[in-house]
Length: 541
Image (cartoon, rainbow, N blue to C red; front, top):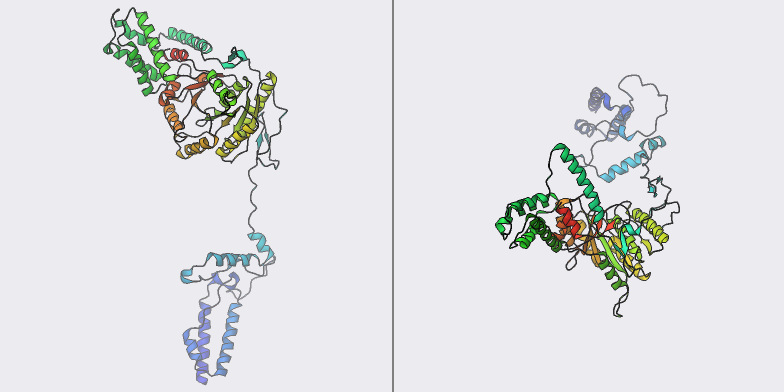
């Protein structure tokens, strides 16, 4: 037994010496190092041979040795100096080196969260150190007034479901002379002027400036009159044939393409001219030139088939004041659609001003619930139109709005119901702009047509868009479901393209739908009807 005790003591001393030699200064007790590994199997096997009393004594010695080992503060002999600042009683989580738990060292997310929470809640200084940074403030909500000034966030929720307060500080609206953009009929109806003489004067002045420049530079401009030059070789008194018209019609097609006319529309126009001229007997050159102009006008009229503002007024009266008792009076509903930025809201306000001149009660429905500022834009238009109507003592206008983020089809349906309940004559529905090639956005128009059930759906197209107008017109015409199509076009920005008015020919040719209005400016009176002779003169210019 005495030999076994001696051997055990030697083994414990050698093991302690080996542990001291293997100490890593990076994992000392100051740094929260791990406890020493258990006693090897050799020591355990030897202790089993001891008696119970000796085993307990040896265990006490080993426990004292482990406690001494765990209580060591550094690898040097002298302990470090006490720091000036107080130290937390619980070691920081980032300073504790823990062994990997579980198979492959994986720890569940819940266990890690619980460990971090318990460590953070142990002392006040660690809580302040591990506290999450405060969140930044949300984006400030701003409102722009009619003068373009922005108000900072005052805590008001920008929900426009409630009626808006009147802005008495708004600037005065410039008056519009009725004789500048329309006239009164014998029955007192106000009809729009056709776009004609005023544009011709502008274009003639531009041509005079251009011819002056060409005279100075010596460059002769080419125009439609050059097409008539192909007829100079035709002998007077000859009957025209297809071979005689081949080169002039090819030149005509190229000329129309330069005027923004789509190729398929230009080919159809040339075919119409050919049908008018084949078999015609020529006189002098002037008679051929006049015959060419007459043939072009007849071909264009077949394509354009314009609708006058007087026709629209008749349709409104038939709905709002039916002559038979079988049909109850109701509001006449018109909707405006189109791609982004073509001027839907602006042209809607022009149409509203035209209807006010005919003493209609008009309800404007703000169904563009997506674009920022759409509701405010219509509110400004409604305020201006109210001022103009009160000044001229004509009609009445009101805005129906439900703010942003709402379903446009439901808002339109509610607006129509509101208009019927309050005896409005016309409901004008504004819609959000959408790309004609975005199927997701275009598909919502079918639901809109079913809910609002408008009498007229007008598409606004730009005069400067070019040949893409054909695809725009076709896609919008097919977006409202089976049996429902567009009812007319409004061509905006006609004052920006000069004589390049091929867009209106292309859109009508693509769909067979007439042009109702032309936009020629930014004021409420800048709305005109389509004149076929005007279009012919510009295309032949």
